[in-house]
Length: 503
Image (cartoon, rainbow, N blue to C red; front, top):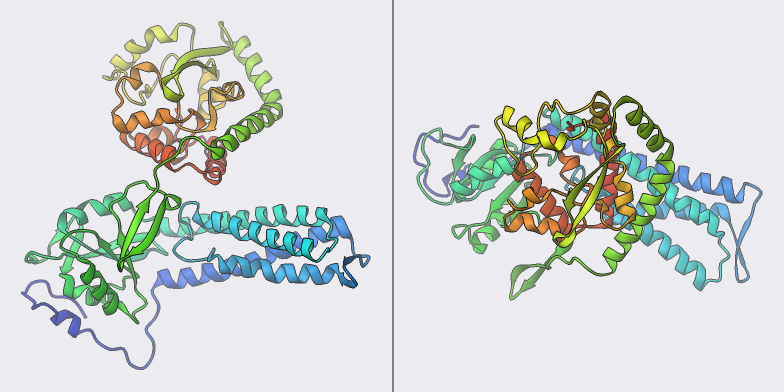
């Protein structure tokens, strides 16, 4: 069946002509099939990861000699405890919906749910052991919990990589029908991207008002109907979701009727709020007088979370500096031998609250390179601007090209972190000439400490436009979380090893 957009169609006629499926069920779309396979793989992988963690903890701490857990007059074998834990852990992952198809491959929500299920489970175990006076070996739990969590996250990361590879090949994408005015439909596909990261692909649009022209497209998306045609358009296009872009023309009653129309079809209904770069933890949806209100918490830049962040920075920078000390000494020696001049390069950058500080780097350019900056930029027809960086910089030394490609030149900033001037994760510090160009949004970068790495570095680094880099930095500043920092550090390590986006 096809939808004919070359004739005027009375409102509601298309919906009434949706065929009713009888007999054999239709073949599921490829995205649904891939999703089921991935879900099944996650379930099996979770069970294996949990079994490995518990078995390893039992073998390392308890052994297989038949140790007991004593609870009053009741003795329980560690095998029983292990089996209960092996059942409860995957169940907790299911209860937190860590395998929900709407979070698989989407940001950090999947990992956060795995983390939440794990720490809540072991918190319950600790409380129950305390109440029953059970002498559970602390080392047993101390080995099982972090080992299992690490295995689960590693397995999810591998599954996510496979999923993204499939999406990049056009497989596993969920087709979406967007509902809203043409001007909003025109902007949405660009914001969504090609679907590799999100997993969603816009295949059709329904507009609330105005005549539909034959073969009409908006930003490459075919307009196939109005509000009365949404279900038919979605079913005919094989869509997995209908997304309503908010507007005055799409009222709450219209959305309610869309929900009724889509009942029993297996097609999701989603609403897009007019909020950009606001993370889920800052939002609370609460019904008020029968209407859903989305409350948005203001971003906070002080408090116990930032105390923990500072402690994490000091501890992390200290450990990394000790581990990399041979590398630091070797790079310093090579720079000294191969190029005349100092080993370290100091440049004044602007930090938190606009305070300047001397940022350290391994020198990767010839001496007095600063004096030639205008000359190099002029040769490329450019000038100092936001996130300026010469494309082919003749001032860079041979060893400098290597250490810049793998971001080794940034390692001395670990000492800036230890001195409290920088953080491990945050917006990259910029010079005063760049700060002078800030608008209101960009100034929000200065509300936190600058970072050794940041969100935009792991999202494209030098390949991003200045506007996109600023947007990512502001998103980080306003939605920071400890778990997000750990994800950025992990992605930074991957990007540095691969030399992605650096110049």
